[in-house]
Image (cartoon, rainbow, N blue to C red):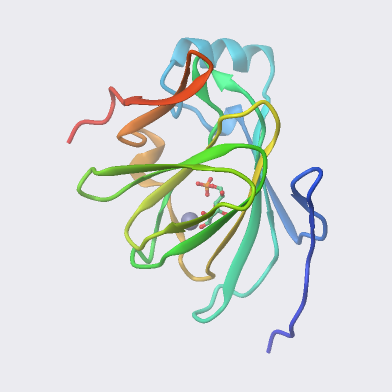
Length: 189
Ligand code: S6P
Ligand code: ZN
């Protein structure tokens, strides 16, 4: 049986100090996910920049366990589209999730299977409820690292599926120095 434990977040960097696993998501792992392919290719040819890192505590992927991880999205854009996570549905689609904003400014874009979308800004202290059945992606809309804590059923699973090729109904882009939602031309339903 797993024993109780603690971990700690460094609020100045937004990172989890004593993580068990770290996932690195660089531009090369996000082929086809940003709308402007030409600018993406130019950026990747120059440097395979880090887009986001996920710091995980390890718990068994079993019903009843709560996985928790800190995601740090680096500041940056591909054209006018903010650096973002891949985004996913949970394999167990009825599993919800909680996000807590830790550092920086960002947002969460969500979609359901009917093609509806929902967007909320996240700042330090914001608690976002990802309802069951809603896919979720986060974006960094600021000039510094954007970090948040995610807590979710450890057996929820990640379904990246069509999101990797098509994305969300809306793109989160910078317009006149502010985040705006615009229609995603690839998303037709
Ligand atoms: C897991 C939770 C987060 C994300 C992380 C990276 O359910 O939503 O820990 O895994 O933010 O995003 P993604 O879409 O690449 O898994
Ligand atoms: Zn999730």
